[in-house]
Image (cartoon, rainbow, N blue to C red; front, side, top):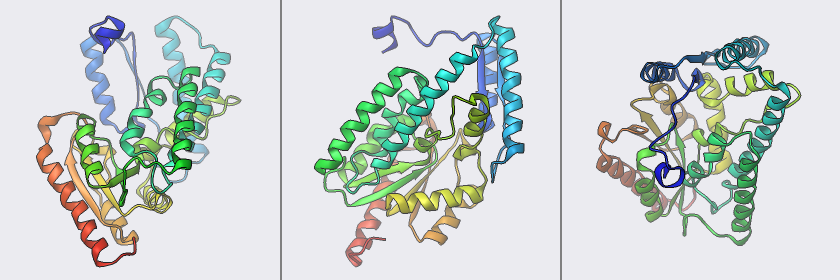
Length: 314
């Protein structure tokens, strides 16, 4: 697509790289590598991690780092930050985030009008166009279409029998076979932590830097296990799921939540069955897709057996 649409061989070479460790500290190493590869400066934000309650101390620490980053970017680019333009961009981002949150909420409907795999495609504007009018226009169209699907009872998975929650990073390199596997078995993955990260409710144009600091420090991957457990328990109830799939990504271990017992804890506390997949976000060499498909097929079959044994859903 980069060649056919934009007539370029790949992403343009960056002038500067900027990262935030709120998604895990591996990101710092990745960006340091690309800094060496491209021969460009790398700048980073390191907000307080494993945050429980998000108080003034944590937010102020992130604010100070953002102010330092602004100064470094002004030095690298030779341009001063336009605070009026920043406020406008934050306002557009906040409006897009509210729309995204409303889109996520529509998946609580039974049957769900879209799946987690649909969300991973529709979230592209939240990643690449956040802060632009184009993102708002796109998300408004998506929301309108989904509301029509809800009103008409049109299901993303015809004959939906099971609803699952996806915790952990997506397996980006296998979205199509995974979505088809669930579709064939009348199982809908209706929500996940990754897609929920971009519902940044705290953004406010009247205090852009502080609210950006709060929003980005407070995302799910950067929170304590107690916070994560409470958040996930609430999500499971709100979306009415029958089970949970945890993905432990080999190249993003900090974005997985099974190594320190969270999966076991929630299985015991909620009674929901769960499955742990050991795979990767991007590298197909690190796992067997056939094995993943067998694990998922067996897990869904177990839900079939449980449903046959007792008609009431968990």
